[in-house]
Each structure stands twice: as structure tokens, then as C-alpha cells.
Image (cartoon, rainbow, N blue to C red):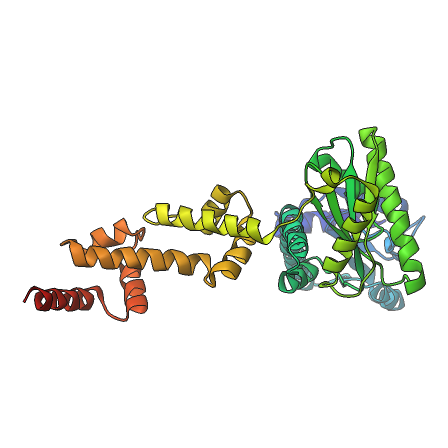
Length: 411
């Protein structure tokens, strides 16, 4: 808090009151005039300020007017005499958060400050939440964006997750295009991402998939560009990025730009067009390593995932563990696994575990706990429910039925 008043007695009185009633408030400065108040507010940007209306040099109102456009989030409490009510009205027009009268009742002053303490606390919690989300998005966005681009390469554009990405980042998609870059000298993924991010900051949103061999960038075309300007804008951006890559790598950088389209599924068309342009300008070997997930490659990923599940179902494994083994992200594995098998990772894992559990029920005199642990379920109660849901019978009922079947076969 900062406190400002041109009367020393009133200033001291305010200080003593706050220190006694609100020991959690840190008074960082006391001002005897408007000039000092302005300097304190700019230096500390305090949460709260008790400000006298009439002060020499600059009035409290004038200080508030000077600082209202500077983004200082201070909550102002106007301290004024009843006769200055017209000034108070003007202060309220400046979104003053409260006022106290001279002389005023202690309880009213206490309630005003207490109310604003609640406001400050709520703002801090909200800001912390926003900061957390912002940090989380900084981590997730590059991975999520790469996976969305992978769906374009495989020509199975993931519209659902693209829309989730747009909402999470408050982006409106009006049109887009794909540009594929092929540096002739190496550049690290981190450096490439940083260079592209620095160049496009404030110009447009984008997604990028960076590999050791090449880089694919999806540009989000700004809404204000009319259709006649979109193509030239794309070409300017493409040459600008390529120029920066050439400068950083001290080598040539080929690139191909696809057409501008107004829907996400059409980005697959734009990507193919960007590759066609590159083919016309470079050798087959130069662009063969660019990101593209063929159907055969996806089948191989899924087969390796199935092998991992069959070999490790008795352990406490997860989709992330399986994805690490296969060498792709959990998001992409989940996407292609369901596409190739018709089942989710969990459904496939459960089927394998329950199949093994049925074998153990038939062949050995094991307890439910033993069977549960041998099938990868650490919680016996949960295993019991999963078994009944998938088999349609309890373990006891299944065992009895299997025993009766064996007795008939023996006869």
C-alpha cells in the first residue's frame, strides 16, 4: 500500500490505522504531495493506495488520470471531505474502488480496505492460474502443434484436436497455408523453432514441425488480408523465413509454398502442393526425409505397440510407457492405434489381461488376488469389477462353469 495526504497528522493517522488493523499490509511509501505519489506508484505499482483528493503540485485525481493508461493495477481509495463530493464523483468516473470521508468512522474505513483485500487476493489467484495455464501451454503447444501437423502429413486431418488447439490458444482460423523448408546445412530443432517464433511474433499464428532434415510451417493467414493479397503475403513470409535460415546456417535453404485455403482439411492439399514445388526445385533424395507418415509406417508403430502390450500386460503400464517404447508421442499413438485396431489402448490392454485371467482361472487354483496381480491389476476390487464387466460373470461363476464343462468332457 501507498498512502498520500498533504496533512502530516492525517498521513500518520492513516499509517497507524492500517498497521494496527491490517498487519498483513506492507506500507511501501508515504507521500505528502501529488508528485511524490506519482513517483511511488510508478516505482512500486502497489496493490492499494489511499489518496487524498486535494494535494499541492498534483491532486490525487490528476495523478490517477496521468497513470490510468499505463496499465498500473493499483486499487484507489479516495480520502476526501464531504464538501468535495463532486471531486469524488469524478474519481468514480475513473473507476476508483472506494472512498472514505474526513473525518470518517473507523468501521467504514475498515470495511472498505477489507473488501479490497479480498479483491486483491482474488486477482492474485486468477493471475497465478493464468500464469500456470500460460506456462503449461508453452510446454504443450509445440508437441500438440506437431501432432496436428502429422495428421496433415498422413492426410487424416485431425479437425477435432485442431479446434481444441484453437480454443486453448484463443485463435480464430480464417485461412491457412503450408510452407515446407529444406535447409541444405544443419540447424538444431530448438534453434529453428526459436528463429521462426521470433520472426512471426506479432505477425501471425503458426504451427511448426521441425525435423533434422526439414521444417514444415502452417501459417494462419490474418483475417484482415483480402484474397488478392494472401498469396503475395505468403510469399513474403516464406522468403523472409528462408532468408533467416540461410543467414543462420550460412547455407542455401529451398522451400515450397502451398496454396492458401479456408478450411483445415484443405491443409493436406496445401502440404502436397508445397512438396510438389520442392520436387521441381530439388532432387528426390533432398526431400525424401521430410515428415510424412505412410500407412505402412503407422502399421509398424501399431504392431510394435501391440507387441509391447502382450509382453508387459502383467506390469502397471500406460499409454505413455508404450509410446516411449514405440518412439512416438502418446497423442499420435492413441490416434493411429484406434484407427488401425478399432480399439483404444486401454480397451486392447484390458482384452489381453482378461484373456490371460480366464486362462489362470481355468488352469490353476489361484486366489483372486494372485490372478489380479499376475494380470497387471494392483487393486483386486477393481480387477473383480473389470472381469465381471468384460466376461459377464464373476470370477467364481466363471470358474464354476469351466469346472462343470471339464467334468462333462472327462465323462
